[in-house]
Length: 379
Image (tube, rainbow, N blue to C red; front, side, top):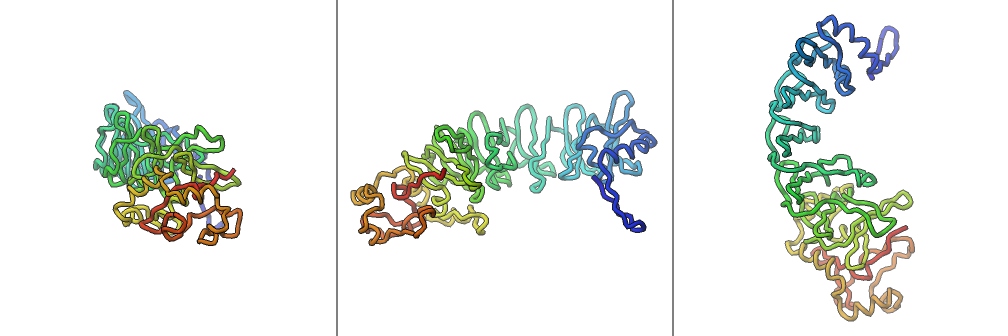
């Protein structure tokens, strides 16, 4: 759709794309071409004063001209596809493709079996040759070598997770498969996670209310799977558990609100509470997963693993307090918090170590997942 304002008449004229194609078709014939490309994406070039046209000699070839008939790309290509996101053109010659600019300049040489735009803002493309995949930038520089079996992943099972781009997860991570295993690269092309995981994302199986989960978006963390156990990775690829130890990491949508949960050793806790307590802040609060995680004590990763995996390693006083289930008045007097709102989710308690055997959450971002922190998923 195109708009035109006539100042003399003080009117705005609106032209639909089919109208513009029809209007310019006679001119294209006058310029010596057969017609305008019928591909919808190519017709969008009209909105930028360009036309993807065809010419038939011995065989059909394609060109790009401006609205005055001046040549932008000569009629020598087997196929041309306009890329509205960048304003460039993917061209094909003898089964090989490349990228040319709208000024006729070569951005990516015509040497690949296929090229697909990965992200226009980052200027990245997925390129393939001989059944192998990699990543190149708009200048043709190789960012990830074309030697992998897959770049990007199928995000269709995670439709309720609102994933926008199958190539970039958690804001910075490119999933790449080599053989049967998956690894991660960042947007600069640096490999941040080796090929060690069976896959990314959790497919709900046991809880009827649970939804498939790939990313916790507010925290930009990714769910990864190894040997049917799960972990969380931040946007620089660091494991937040230290190892895959969770049985389930999923989301529940209730009352229009999305909640995230971690289950380990038959105990369930709020994933956002866990992330808050290890120092990972929400992106909306100005948090940076990379800086938050890297600034933690170097022992935190192993501590987090112990916290998730060893949920029963508390002393006898802890067991007694857990059995009491928070009903013991003496425990309340010794520092257990009650926010006075029965509908508010219970937060991890911050008592001094040694009081009734309870653990201290304040040291190095540690969080113990014991039965006092377990909260039932909201239905």
